[in-house]
Amino acid sequence: MPVMPDHWIRTQALENKMISPFVEEQKRDGVVSYGLSSYGYDARCSDQFKIFTNVDSAIVDPKNFNPNSFVDRTGPVCIIPPNSFALTHTVEYFRIPRDILVICLGKSTYARCGIIVNVTPLEPEWEGQVTIEISNTTPLPAKIYAGEGICQFLFLQGSSPCETSYADKSGKYMGQRGVSLPRM
Image 1 (cartoon, rainbow, N blue to C red):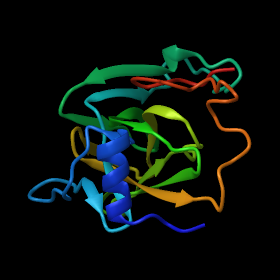
Image 2: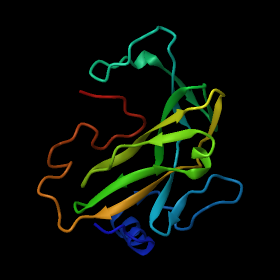
Image 3: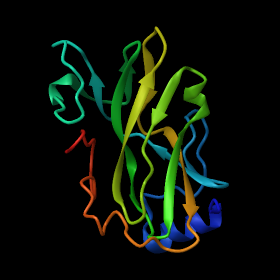
């Protein structure tokens, strides 16, 4: 399962709208980098955040998730409380080809500050804005910058197209825009 290089990502983004909007070169001057890299694409986080709060002492239940567990914020930065997390989404909209699986890794700039990014794999033929979970593992508040790099996506090509894609299954997160909370 090869990792796909920059020229393949560029072609897929420009000709097949795999990533939109697409940034051809990696941007770095004074920002957490984003855009096309050698073997991946560094995506940006939006300016919309859902910050976890435990004001009501709720239990986190993925089968019956209470949306009141979040406080919504929009702006150029997000402050994540100590030992908490926030959700955001990518600026970019992704359309994954049928023979590709995408995995996501956090940016080292944030990881070196104790900020961890989690995203499940993007399955073949899934499309949408990616909901990103950002965990602040430190005992201090953490600042996240909207419109800047938050994670890197790596594109893995299967030896052949899959029999059943995410689109074939009519997956529940297909076509999502904005932050999507857990669904059953």
